[in-house]
Length: 121
Ligand SMILES: [Zn+2]
Image (cartoon, rainbow, N blue to C red; front, side, top):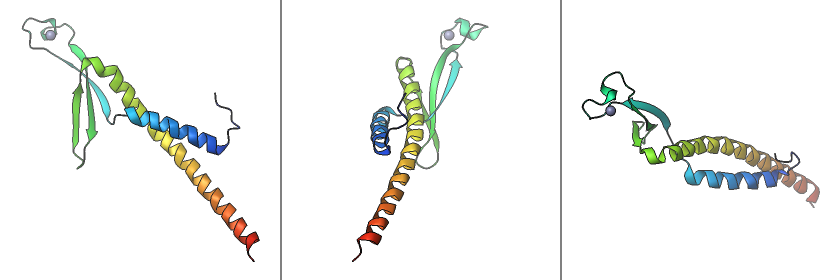
């Protein structure tokens, strides 16, 4: 747990570091799991046995608003799930950062105004 007394500047630096880390591995898309039958005749998946899977499929909206996607190789499924979660964390971190940016900007503005008002000669 972080001390609630962290000055905003330090909070901001910490957020920026976390955002940097998350951004390096973030993947964009929505995961869906599919179960499929294979090409082996007589495999249990063709009768009442369990089908093969889950096969992970990541879909997302591409450049022109067209939905696209890709199948994820078994070996990197966990990594892909984690990276898509990183994207979601990134979004909430960025929202918090934007909030801190706003407070910082307003504070700078207030301070400038004060300096200007008292420093005029
Ligand atoms: Zn099969």
